[in-house]
Image (cartoon, one colour):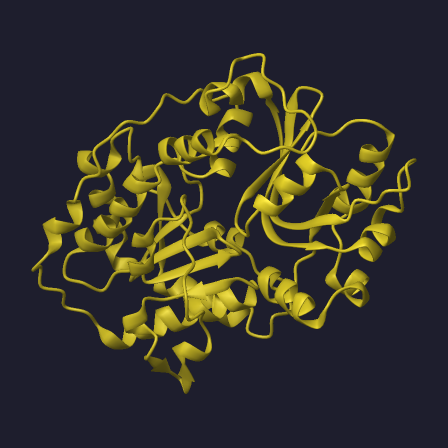
Length: 363
């Protein structure tokens, strides 16, 4: 969506720069819509935008789906990107947010956005990766050609990660690779797990994720577990919705934190005789989305830290393509226990940064 002009500048400040709590506007929505927004954002406020009626605007709005990306373009730059959480056609809500324009119209084709990030990326730079001419510029509320969007996500992973790298000045070459079936290397490997430790730490990661107000996923085979009287299935989501940039394989990872359709973090709890198996699972995931920026963690007993680092430095994992020695961090059981206990009463809003600060990297 293109920004610029008095109305759009004011509206951007009103409902994107200043995100809106659901309680601010819930009286204009149906109860099921309110419940959906609250469930989707886990208590976080929304950035909100809308479009006035018109053939093109209506067509593009109708084509939007939950989990789609939207970008804000202004003065030659992409300044924000976000994920669509929900859309509604609601005249009263639009008038509450933005009143009406000089023609008496209001921006009634409304969409709610989460996982929004600010950028300062030249459109000419992004055009290289979308396959548009260098001088292409968006006009109004419009859709990127589907085949161009699909190719970008297939080649580079998720849009937010790509924009973050472009914003930092990196130039990415197109990633061409054959998806290696490296997980086959551990088929038949004897896994000697310590059930109590594995279950306890998985339970604590679930609790920490809940305190951070994320959706938490564990593999279906683990959802029947319980620890300290808590049944896992009561604390985690039952279904895992994947998207083009969220590979199905992530459903096999021990614990995943997500918000909307976006992955926020992934954890492999390693109790096996070989640290190699857990890293292979993360490696397989990384090979499918090599440009993803969400943190990956190996969680293990502290006395196994050096083993983890030795494996991460192996050429198989530390090459420029996977770069697991930079992407994967180690965090000990004791650190997970400490985080869980320190925030037992949820006095402070947890987030992934709290975990990252406790983690260690081999490089």
